[in-house]
Image 1 (cartoon, rainbow, N blue to C red):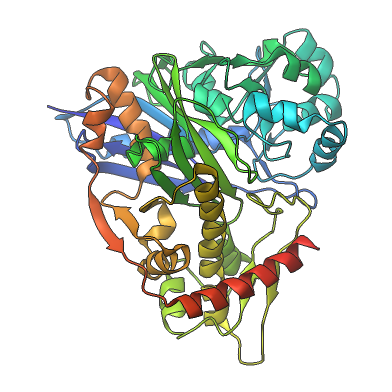
Image 2: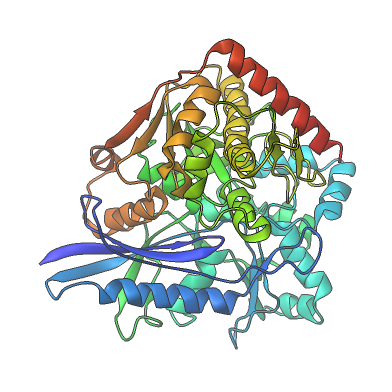
Amino acid sequence: MSDLILAIDQGTTSSRAIVFAPDGRMVAKAQQEFSQHFPDDGWVEHNPEEIWKVTTQVCRDALDQLSDDQRVLGIGITNQRETTVVWDKTTGTPTYPAIVWQDRRTADHCRRLARDGLEDDTRARTGLLLDPYFSATKIAWILDNVEDARAKAERGDLLFGTMDTWLIWKFTGGKVHATDATNASRTLLYNINDQCWDPVLLERFGIPEAMLPEVLDCAADFGTALEGLDGIELPIAGVAGDQQAAVVGQACFEPGMIKSTYGTGCFALMNIGETPRLSQHRLLTTIAYRFDGKPVYALEGAIFVAGAAVQWLRDKLGIIKSAEETEALAESLSSNRGVYLVPAFTGLGAPHWEPDARALICGLTRDSGRAELARAALEAVCYQTRDLFKAMEEDAGERPETLRVDGGMVANNWLLQALADIVHVPVERPDIIETTALGAARLAGLQLGLFGDLNDLAQHWSLDRRCEPQLGDQERDAMLKGWEVAIERARNG
């Protein structure tokens, strides 16, 4: 009988369930999208109950694909980070829709705190910037804008969680209210130096500590899934935020190693070891993973819109029917013809951090069409990655030798080569590009004894494709100059 791990990848636009063998083979897979809600300018919401329903459905669908001689030992969960859920701890009813990480409604709150001179202290405690991206101001908004929410929270009747916590609570029938250190480190409430919820920050944001989950290691006992799996009971043994799970899946266990994941957004993390270090270029310092109570840290650059720009071409403009079409469209052009897309649909992330920036397309002529827009959407991912890479290089004092990439977008070979050309380092795609889900499975496998240690995990990483830079310096510099002009225009509104 073969032993397997069920990985739940609860993303921004869909939930996936993938059953992995210990060697990383995908044995079964199911995926389902869920609704996106945009009730106001810059607002993004999800229905937590819909996510629970979709997540359990894909789990059941994946488990149904297994044969009788295949046994699932446990569950690993990875999730969209920062997305905020507040619910009644007695009834389990969400107090308000989930406020998604992309949501910008609390930008004024963050600006007020910054004007009060609190950003440096907050950053020293959390490694994060005062930005609506993170959970703290989202929680505060719910408490201040939903009738009786603050009074209930102060009585201890409401619970907060990022999406991992919500799923753990639902799976365990309300028995476990917990998160892991990586998700906690994204709330703007967790002290990454002292490894605890910070009382100064809780007071600063007006959030009762009773709302907050217990913080565990990434490989730990998160309780037993008793609900949602048609009577199957499985231990929840590994949890990490999606980008940190990809660090594990990409085996970036040595300082200086860097990975970049391309999904709805783009997130690059560089391992910086056991000592936190603050960026000089407005990158984030975050917990990459934690075992036995000992954290390893990373510098992170977050791009809010990557694959979401391709979704926009498909769903709003209707110029493509599937994301796969963009590869052939981009390849059909010998150059970008001066067309740039700055996908600041929900502001700009690192290293700019401009919540009020708005998307723009520039350089269009009467001859511009589907191919130019598709190529501009893909190139925008490359330019933004280069901006992050440059900042990381300057912070770390050395240039990483390679960039490991993953996520759904990197199945596009044209994009892979464009990344190598623009970032100007070799780009490596692993055999398994579902490294976010794989990382969750690896974490659960560590807890359940399928793997010995991180060196054991590193031995399982294998290369599928490596792209070397091919673009000449002159052409690359011209393209980057055009991008810098475009992004400056977006930043100025």
